[in-house]
Amino acid sequence: TQLLEQSPQFLSIQEGENLTVYCNSSSVFSSLQWYRQEPGEGPVLLVTVVTGGEVKKLKRLTFQFGDARKDSSLHITAAQPGDTGLYLCAGGTQGGSEKLVFGKGTKLTVNP
Amino acid sequence: DTGVSQDPRHKITKRGQNVTFRCDPISEHNRLYWYRQTLGQGPEFLTYFQNEAQLEKSRLLSDRFSAERPKGSFSTLEIQRTEQGDSAMYLCASSPTRGYTFGSGTRLTVV
Image (tube, rainbow over all chains, first blue to last red):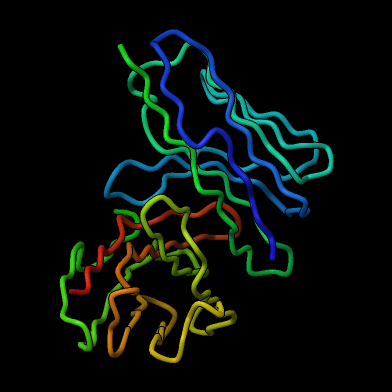
């Protein structure tokens, strides 16, 4: 069974601070996707990374896929209250369906 | 295009009743997925359609669960003889290849 361990589970920081969320597995994934989810809503795709070592930037968010395609990180620079939410990493399984294995999520709170 | 629509948003049912949820995907997406999410957990895969063909089902999908996607358009997920353990958010997503667009989900509460 493929598992994704996400850490930390909860993170509460002040506006302007930097943070990093980690997503680790012993399994290789065909892709790694990051989503953000608000309470009572479905997850919203932030980024997809597919190549080992790939780095993608989305404004103040930087996403990295590990060289061996088993782990990923999300770094947020100068966090803002609007960044508050549940961040989920998800690994794409090989075999054609691209079904996703999700981590449990990191609940981020950015205090003004 | 208004994204992925799910109906209803909320459903409260008594244990033992049958329920059916509907998902309308983005029209040009041929892949459709159902996931289930319980409190404090990430979504868990239930089943996958490519066009009208159901190509993969999770072991989580007991024989009380059935999903269809007639003509490769909308999809339905039916749960028969609901149990309290079925209480969860049921999420539908569609995708062209990689990267999903999720609907807002159907929150099921079994009392």
